[in-house]
Amino acid sequence: MNLYKMIETLKEHPDYPKMGMIASHLGVVRETSLNGDKVIGIEVIFDEDVVNGVIPKIKQMPGIVDVLIETSGGRLDVGDEIMAVVVGGDTREHVFPALIEAVDMIKREGASKKEIQYHRR
Image (cartoon, rainbow, N blue to C red):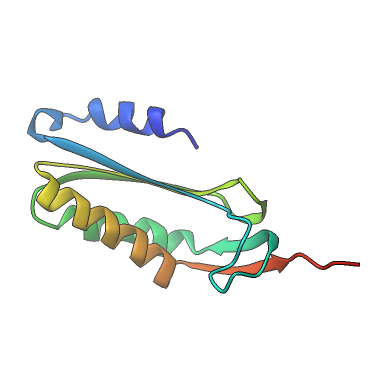
């Protein structure tokens, strides 16, 4: 995943002059779960049909010009990149909520993950 490249792709969009903001999200594997347990990685599966279906839904939101999404499935270690989302639109009042909605939709409907716990011996 290369956020810089994704942003450059948005800047090549024919409607780039309508964009006043580009916002991005880069999810990475962290070393602790939400409940504080130590993890060494995750196994994640993305439903690409669902992920691809997020794009037209977000593009229908007010002021949004384009949305790009990249995912990494399978076994991922701490520090590995999980998902990148880039949203381009007219103003931050439109772009930030669209970015949050895109990430939430993918996590809620298009991804399943299992943490790989750290076990002491």
